[in-house]
Amino acid sequence: AQRMLKRSAEILEKTCTDQGDLYCLGQGEFVLVCRRARYNKLVHLISQVIFTLGRENHKVNDRSVLLNATAGIIIDIMDGMQSLLWARQTRDQARALRRDWLIRRLEPDLAKIHQQNLHVLSLVRQALEDRQIEPHYQPILDLYRRQIIGCEALVRLRDREGHLHAPG
Image 1: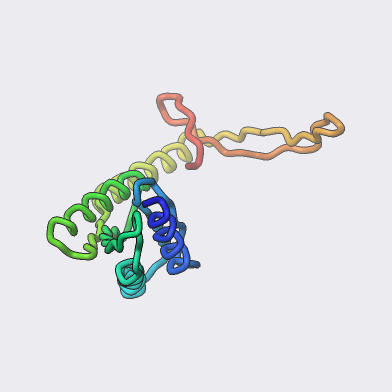
Image 2: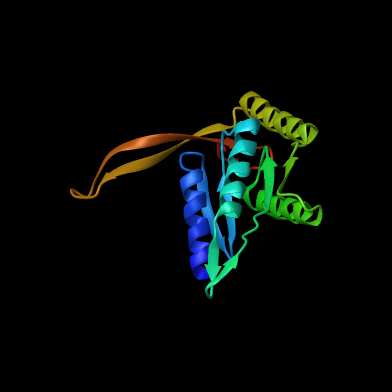
């Protein structure tokens, strides 16, 4: 079984070269994170992996074993851990439907993102009007000479409640 998992990882690695970052989560579960994959290219890639894994003759204790792979594909991911949960649920749904893969597109809550952007803009506008943008200086040290050789100027926004906000 270990040899079969290792071979599966090799096939995935070979097929997915330059397509994204491949991670092994253990127990034969792999995650491929494609940052800029096109939909058609992604489907082709996954079908190629599943076909390659399924056509090889695998041996466990001198017996031929068929290897079956199922993929849960998430498009437009926002948060890494949440996307992993969605991918696992999508994979499980694909298994229940007896399909090789299933694709789910995650649509961000645009209204929520718009509200957050408006809130940040109002904070910045108010801070500018109230002259609450503050410079902060961080020293740059030369560790060999143990001297300050310069400084980095940082900007912080202080809201009306007195809290400091970094640019992020």
